[in-house]
Image 1 (cartoon, rainbow, N blue to C red):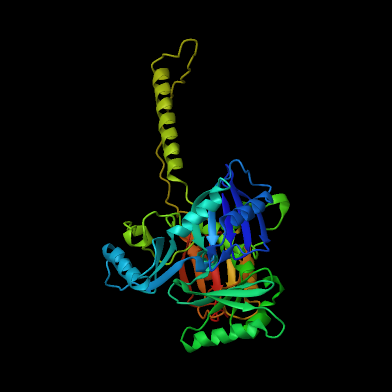
Image 2 (cartoon, one colour):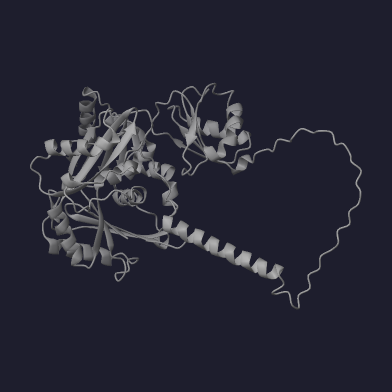
Length: 493
């Protein structure tokens, strides 16, 4: 599958090919062109765009041009119409579609025919709907460009959804955060503003980089504007090719916001996906350059229901999928496809039936000619009954070295995660990773454990009781790479 990100004058290609073992061999390439491909989010010339895409694909050796025909496009936010609104608590699920239609009529009264899709996020007793739509005529233009290369368009994603997917798992339930996702490039700094419910505004913050004015000061001014509106920015997530040149502590001080480098978030929260990617020739995946492509790849796996290629106009949608109405989405590991499960069940039934038939034939002597079956006679000897005194059932010790534990510093005190790691090491735990939490505002220490590993709970609480009295204990999703995640708060002594 080809993931193509098209911006004003550049294209990024991310090629993904799934192996029989469930891993993905990948290829990638990007280029900036001398001519513009998009203007205000729309295609300028179909032939020029097709030519540019062909040039990009030719530079990715892993692409089989005779077979790799399915394309997912990732486009800038200004290629789409966007609407986000809170759903009143008294609106029932059956009335959601009517509610959406009314909002669309009032927000886009004169829009052309469009295709759309939407999703809900529910958290902190609030429900928000995010709706994206795109003009049908624009889709046709894109399909024409791809058709010139014999490619088939299978989906379209806004870049803002791809970015959101890359930090979605860091969002804390029960707390509304305001987040800026920034792209620090060579000539331009761009950013979008989100909160825990998704994209907050489709207006992109764009700052041309020059020596006359430090863009960090402009960014700080933007943060101050949000704070005046009682929307204090809790985190600044930094990506882009120049993000590697930034010192996190100094950047945090200069922009006045806690800075999260994306390069630390993805290995920590999305390792289940990155471990599946097989790099070409042992190369390192350039995350900071292809973040939008990786986010779209993860989104395509976790949100298969989302599609902007519906033929019906936005006001004629008929789907009311209850699964869309969900709590704050957190990434889930790719599930086994239903058709695969059906095949497994059929094979099991056939194997069982064949084994049963074979057993019956053997037991009836059909295949017993020339085969001697010796059945030893059982000799029964009287055994004097003995009374065995009851003994307590022994407690089976757990194998602490088998548990994967992640310790994250959320207290702001330097070295606190390493300190907790040393304590766990003293108690015979071996597989321990440390890092920083999504912020340093944690007052209460949190211990989150997978339900399948719940037997470790009492051990940890007892072993850490000298250091923290009343930690918050919660459940961890089974898709996490770690069995236990400990977020150290300021209450940890």
